[in-house]
Length: 423
Image (cartoon, rainbow, N blue to C red; front, side):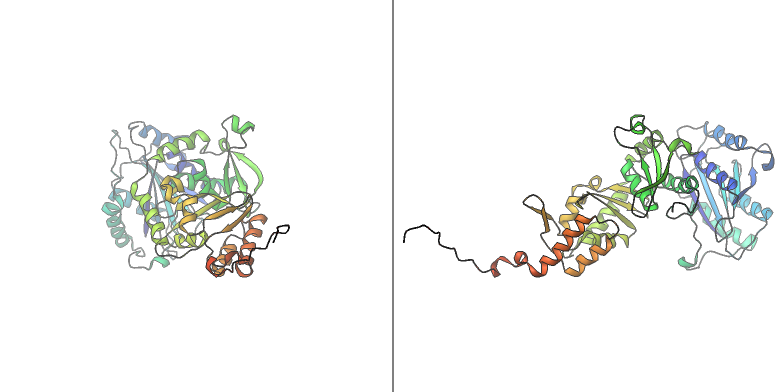
C-alpha cells in the first residue's frame, strides 16, 4: 500500500472533485465517518456542511483541508467492507479517528485506490499538526496495516514499478475527444490548487502545457472591463479552439477574484524554492560554450524544470518562465533576478542578438551549425515564418558569407582613386 497526503485551503475544491467523479460514474462514496447519518442518507449539503461548520471554529488556519489517497497493488481486489476497515485503521493511527471524513472508491486508474476527504480542525477548534505527518505517523501506520490486512508491501519495490499515484490523472486536453468542460475541470482543479504562481502569466505558463488558457480578453472587451475570466482550449499550435467557458460556470469558481487571492497567497515563496532553480541554471551554464537557449531548456528539463519562452511575432525572445515540476513553483525569469530574465539568459548563452540597421538581425556568437539546427528542430512548432527565414539566413551566411570571417583574416580592400582629381 502507498499513501499520499495533501493539504489544501479549499475543502470545497476537494469535495467537489470527488463528487464530480461520482457523477461521472467512475467513483462512489462508500463511507462517512463521524457523521450523524449513514452515507446513503446524506445529500451533498449535509456532507460539505459537516466540514464547513468544523472549519468555522478556527478561521486562522489557512491550509485546513486534507486529501488522502490509499493506493493498492493492481493484483489486489478488496471489498468495500475491507477498504473501510483499512481506512478506519489508518485514520486512527494518524490521529484522525475522531475527525469527520468521507471515503470515495475510485475506478478510473490502473490500480485500486480510495480517496479520503477530511479537515484538520478538531471539535474544539484546535489545529492538528500536519508537519511531517507522513514520516511521523503515516509511514509506521502503513507498514503495520500491510501486516494486519495482508497487503502487498510497497517498501523495497523499484520506483519505476510503483503505481502512478497522482490523485488526479490527466494529460493534454484534445478538443473533441472529451466534453470540453469536463476536460477543463480536470486540468484546472489540479493546476490551480497544486502549483504556486503569483500572476496570470505564470499560471498560464503551466496551463498551456495542457492546452488550456485563462483569458481576460482584450483591454476593450466586455470580459476585461467587467473583470471577467474565461477558460479556453488550445490546439497543438497554441490557438484557441471551441467555445470559451466562463470561470463562474465551474463548480469551484476559479474566477479572477479567486485567483487574485491565490496570487497574494503565493507572493511569499520559500527562498529555497528560488535558489533551487537559480542554482540549476547557474550549473547548466557553467563552463558551457555558446549554445541555443533551447539547449539550456533541455538541460533544465533533466532536473525537473520546464522552460517557457515568449516570443514576438518576429520571433524575438522577450520573456521566459520557469516551471519547477518538483516543488510545483512557477517563476517569471525577472522575479528570480535580472540575470535570469530573457535578455540576460540569451546573453549568458552567448547568443546576444545584435541589430544591424533597422531589421537585419544575426547571432553575434554563432554556435556550431549542428546546435543551431537542433534549435530549429526544438522550436519547429512555435517558429514564425520570419523567424525561420532569419535563422536559415544565419545558417547560409555562416558557410558562405565573409561576415563570419575573423577580422584579422580579411584582406584589406585597396582604395580606388577618385576620378576628377588632378595628377
